Image (tube, rainbow, N blue to C red; front, side, top):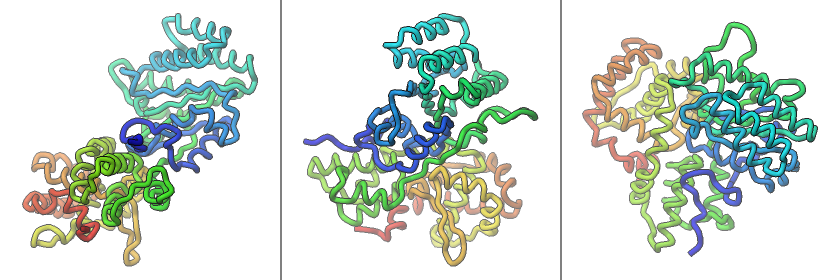
Length: 430
């Protein structure tokens, strides 16, 4: 039996990595120009896989870059618990020491810093200076995953300490001499300017040396080419109706596609030809955490917008009683910036219907997830959300939405099945 070519958890190895050609060009262009990049996107978009890919010499060769000039350190900030500047730089230097195991001079400088009680900006400058002295074209490339963890306070990390850490990090990056020997590529769930400490009234923002780049779902063309073309190593021969179901459930979301492919491949290897309902139930069980993460990482206001999108798509399809959400288009037009953020993070997409902008979920399972959140809420939770609703709409509109919530609770059985949601999307495929 051949190995399953899908990786539902963890970074995808380079030999199985697909797509992201423009993102790779972008990041190597930054590296070649001594610039710094910040990728952002929802959970499961493949941010870690992209960083992981940058640690492989063959990828550099494919991009026409000299791997030997880089000293690469990859670290995930969630592994530093609790996060503190000292713990961060300590981990960076320990990993860098492994990277330069044949360079006794540089190792000696690193050891000297690690033996101290603190690690200051001057210590990192000393190491960068040593790197540049040994080779004027050599540089330290920091691949920092889940940088969000560095942008939240904890009991050992105050907002003042955070601002100092970030400002000093920026100073290292933009130093006219030593900055030539440092590149940073970070990943977060949101744009850096939406995270971190309150900015001081004077001085440059700590993030203004980063060039932002969203990581979005794969296009339909990419999905068809990589997963449903017979010449692809990931090709899975399934019925057209099931293929359409997979496309609707995943809509290009990398981790969802990996999970779908893994399930289908395992089933076919065992001689099982799945029907769409069985597949949906299995898929739902494997991927709920992905949607929970997306929901939890959304702000209160974004959650309300997702709720309104779900309700607008449910409009007229709830029991025998129809309902309408008055003024919802005005709300969406007033919150265009927030909706663009959700779109850039691959959670929703917009289409034009009858000269009108319509928002929908990129994955039909996300729609089901949001509807389930509505179903599982109660009067107390609805009351808590009322303040957020009032920031978006009039009290009359809030009362209308409240009535819709109650109607959803009344007709729970109509919307509680994810299979029903998919069936509505696909027209009850068989």
